[in-house]
Image (cartoon, rainbow, N blue to C red; front, side):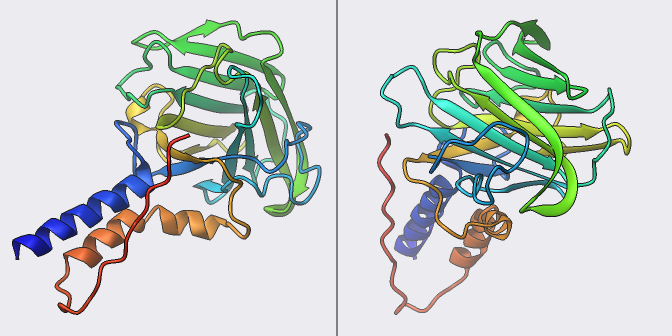
Length: 270
């Protein structure tokens, strides 16, 4: 009996590592993998090609909004990596001064009830103005990003995710390690949000999260040096987010003694 419990505990620990990496804080119920892109995106606020963003996992923010994120880790300079985001809100096709996009980062996934020094927020207000903030320990203070570090554009356009024209944001940060917004390898906390002033809808990942409370942000739990598997979908993301819970119930049930344990191989750190 003790042996069975020990094996069960080991399996549960391995499943947890595969799902959320070595997360320390943040909302680990919402986790994602940082994938190497297959090709750099054209930052023009729309899908330039129908497969431009299929190399990143689509992550659900609400019934009406979705985002994806990926990374270039093949560049020769040790200080130059490029992060890219695509964010879509399917019900917003009006331009309002109160609209905004937000991306928040907790580089070491240290969490907290307020943004800490080294946490960052990118905010685009009214489809015209980009601002960057650093945590202070109690809130946010605006800072000046490195010149040329951030590139963004948004537009009202149809996409493979939704054929009705709606607002789409594309954003790129080409200085992951050397710029104002520095993020080491995962685990990292991350929050992505979009607000439509016309409807009053705020969609965020993790759902219900607040830009001022890193403990509630989602988690980039691990990374892959190969592009995302072909055919990855929003449904797959939802299923993966439930793996830990399903595994817990499955392995805690009593099974026949003839059942064997498959080996699990963890990927090497880059």
